[in-house]
Image 1 (cartoon, helix red, strand yellow):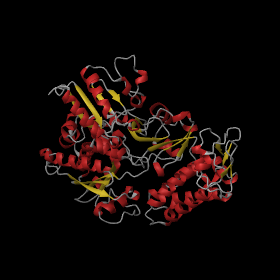
Image 2: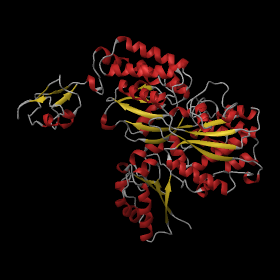
Image 3: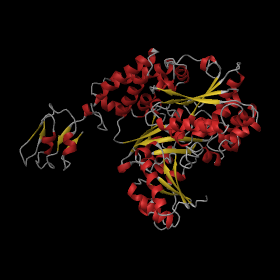
Amino acid sequence: MGYRTFILVCGGEACEGGGSAALVEALTREVREQGLEDVAQVVKAGCFGFCGQGPVVKVLPDESVYVKVQPWDVADIVAQHVRDGRPVERLLCDRSRNRERTRVEVPDYYQKQFRIVLRNCGVIDPESIDEYIAREGYAALDRALFDLDPEGIIDELRRSGLRGRGGAGFPTWQKWVFTRNAPGDEKYVICNADEGDPGAYMDRSTLEGDPHSILEAMAIAGRATGAARGFIYIRAEYPLAIRRLEMAIEQARARGLLGRDILGSGFDFDIEIRLGAGAFVCGEETALIASIEGKRGMPIPRPPFPAVRGLWGRPTVINNVETLANIPVILLKGGDWFASIGTKDSTGTKVFALTGKVNNSGLIEVPMGTTLREIVTDIGGGIPGGRAFKAVQTGGPSGGVIPADFLDTPIEYASLQELGSIMGSVGMIVMDEEDCMVDVNKFYLEFAVDESCGKCAPCRVGGRTMTNVLDRIARGAGQESDIDQLREIGHAMQKASLCGLGQTAPNPVLSTLRYFREEYNAHVFDRRCPSRKCRDLVVFYILPEKCIGCGLCARRCPVHCIEGERRKVHVIDQAQCIKCGECYTACKFDAVSQK
């Protein structure tokens, strides 16, 4: 059946939570009731990336993007757009710029992106293998089986310059070579989908929106390295991604694309899913392997590396979701094509979960070398409320904080490392002038302490000690020696911790000591939090010239520390104030201030 219009509904986690499943049903019903079944098809796609504006609906072929769509908008979309060919202006994501245009264009949020990893997300139904195949799905596996030998596959990866997207940036082709050349008849391929960084959801969204791309890539890895068995290690708390992976594996087996004698080539390869219980440390390779083996997820010293001695003591290739999602495209378009994107030492693209104090939060993919300013300002739409940009953190709890002075820094492995951060998971969290660096670092260190396996003392003791020091500074009890102690412990953890969790946990603190030392000084020497986030250092007071004596602040105060007669200026008893901020929130006349 030849449809002329396709109505794509975002099926990502954020839009699902906003009711996109109900929109699919309502749109399907409305298309049927208006007699348009022969010309329009409703498709539940993967994540569009515009997560902060969901639920999102895209209409093809004119690519109109509708945001924050509700069930009562469905009739207008079908009648006005599908039937009459006129976009619904009030729902367009960039309607202010398109009222005079006949063709609706997408905003800079999409225009500055280049999608390789996310090429199918938001374009196809992730639960349909036929739609994946229609987008050249499994064509790369066909080439790997019949046109290339294992050395040829690895050579394409070498020429592509693809580096691991999980953090360390190790060349993917070298890891595959180590496993291929390692002795042993039984080898494995593991997809690391244990994404647990706060603010990061890139891998989860890729699996939800394009699961077949990961299966295809793992089969290609098996062909290149001599492995016949693969495992996807994913958190049990990602039920949508797991369900779609299970469906994809069943579909691929039914089509002869997984299992024995794939496509009659004589090559055997199959995949199993293993669920993790949500331990952050299991993102580390050796801890992940231990978990798959049924042991407690704890890292062990390396070498030997998993590529040589991994799962059950056998050679094992481990790549994360984003790394694998690039593989089919590289084999189809060639390593040289991939290397032409990005920069010389950081080729291809990078996926970010853009969150925090930014107008357009969501999932983005940009060429390596794109500057932080382009991401925050052009794609992210800047800071809400006209507030000033303060910093951006890359790499989650393992990354560093980059201040405004370096907004024009290109995103590359080397440039981020020079600034004291890492590529890492690249959840990119934007902060504004109201964010306190001490408070932010307390959050990340507490997370790292909670997630530490406790095996090595530098991480176990060092992380807890740094957290206690930050807590003391935030309470106004900091000492001059605390700042030096934070730096010394942080460097010791980097050098002596057993795995990447402990080695990188101090990064946020060390980077902020480097760029925001004056903010620490204010906490320690002036007993003041410049951002007014550390409650113990905040003083609430009433401005006499603005107070009208309404008494609302006094009624809202939980400890009754505000006194004053009706229609006269009220006063806060600082000795009794618990700094809850209820008076500040309650006042309708901006008479309550803080410092």
